Amino acid sequence: MNDPLAAFDARVAGLLAALEPRARTGLARDIARELRASQAARIAAQKNPDGSAYVPRKPQLRHQRGGLRRRAMFAKLRTARWLKIEPTPASAVVAFANQVQRIAQVHQRGLRDRVNRNGQEIDYPARQLLGFTDAEIGAIGTRVLDHLAGAA
Image (cartoon, rainbow, N blue to C red; front, side, top):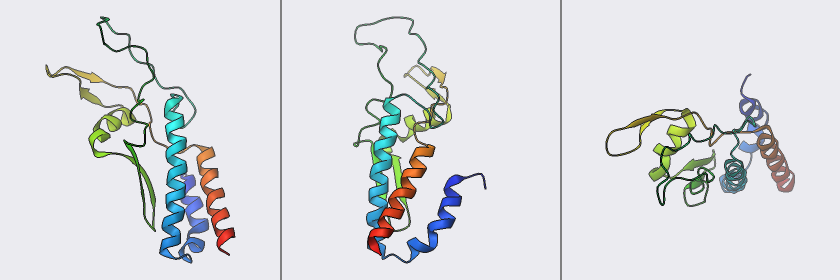
């Protein structure tokens, strides 16, 4: 199995199935909150899930008043307003709100996007905004085991 989450899911699926749906939703909410916080912290640190740094912005040709400066990328995207959680009894989802999904998807996958009304398109390098680190997978496992120990 290449996917560490699939291996983890196979180990705890039976234990989680024994929980009531309300308890599973509460656990999913707690996990999603922790994931949102860790994803936001990683985005603030400008790191991909594998630990490598984001590709820096290209230098700007002109420096206009109010123009783009060397600030941290995705400062607004990492806030709780745009980085939403959706817990259900079956899953815990951390995703971007509808209004910014296109921007996040372009950067996540390294796609081409139009940047102004003149139709100019730019190729963006891949900057993985969302993804699992080994520490996050371990934290999910710890949270699940703590919850199951408390429920027993």
